[in-house]
Amino acid sequence: MSLLIKGGKLVNADQSVFADVYCEDGIIKAIGKDLDVPAGTEIIDAAGKLVMPGGIDPHTHMQLPFMGTVASEDFYSGTAAGLAGGTTMIIDFVIPNPQQPLMEAFETWKGWASRSVSDYSFHVAVTWWDDSVHQEMEQLVKEEGVNSFKHFMAYKDAIMAGDETLVNSFNRCLEIGAMPTVHAENGELVAHLQKKLLKAGITGPEAHPQSRPTEVEGEAANRAIRIAQSIGVPLYLVHVSCKEAVDEIARARQEGQRVYGECLAGHLELDDSVYHNTDWSTAAAHVMSPPFRPKGHQEVLWKALQGGTIQTTATDHCCFCADQKAAGKDDFSKIPNGTAGVEDRLMVLWDSGVNKGRLTENEFVAVSSTNSAKIFNIYPQKGCIAVGSDADIVIWDTDKSHTLSAKTHHQKIDFNIFEGRTVKGAPHITISQGKVVFKDGKLNVTEGAGRYIKRPAFPSIFEAVEKYNQDNAPYKIER
Image 1 (cartoon, rainbow, N blue to C red):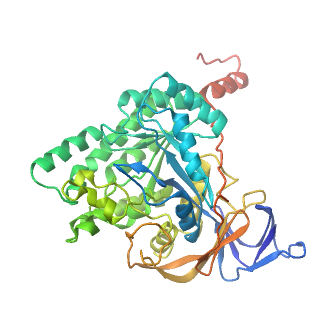
Image 2 (image 1 turned 60 degrees about the vertical axis):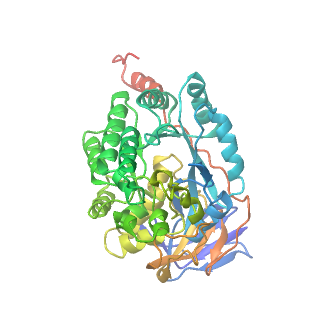
């Protein structure tokens, strides 16, 4: 199958040029003007449009079993919704129960994800520690192409990883060429504050942000960064939501430490006033962790994204409908944590970023696609439009207006945190594996068409030491 995209402006993270793009068998084969293509090639007129790499969402949770229920969005509906919003790949999370073998959980998630309509990959969470976890981490890296491991510093008595687990897992990541990632919230403090608020009779959604103040995130971010610094391993912080965490990342990067930050479209746009809505269901629909922050933190995140302290954007897409949120009607700590956004991220980011002058079109591509591909070691297969790259492309209409709403979105959830917002700039056509899968507001997807994408390991410290010794004899580093 062949496809020619003609007349558009090709926008990568590093440059923008006017060129045509020829795709064949799911791969970009040629870029240029007046390309010679086979007869029968499907031609797409992209005049007046931007031709960009499809978005990569590095943080989703499709059909996640969590807090006594299961997220309403499955891999089929979730990846389809992503395509409708211009996102052509997700990196989801395998989250083993404490004491569950990592490989067992991985096979379960991979089975669920086999219904995906776009490409996908996995981070794997380390929720406990023993010799079997040590061994299976290497197996996941070498055999399954997993090069990142998640650590929840929150959710005490559930999936929280204590300092001992962090130290052991971070060190193992260094040995096997993997990137540790963290959900940075002090779980002990959260549990303490939850009990204190409930004892005081504060049971509604307004208590959620009170139980997880910004200091809780800042402390955990600092602790994770310092542990990574001591061990000498890079670190990626997911869903950075506040100034305190941004400051810790900035300090570490200024000291030469390899620390990366991710922020969510929701945290860039919404503040904690959403938890004071007089309608309980609406307030509860916004319950996620970290919570939406007081006014002022949003601009800090935007500046961190502009300045490079934060490199990627994501959604933490984890859907729970009103009947599921109602489990916490009398106890805010039992409200399932999660909101949606995989379909909305690019549109919100373009409207508030590019349209308001915060981001250039090239920076938009970087923070929505390219940087994730680079950080998680799948560039240039993903994250750019180049000869040899996967034909995952979004043709973007900068003039198209679209109103975000639960009434019209493709996400399997009865609420949209951006409800009623009209954005300017939206997907015109989405192409996955060289096939048109979204056009004129309609999806044309095939269940199971998504591929599992392996991500190669990073060079281990031992390989780096060997190379240094070979290149710098007789100056040797002792292991």
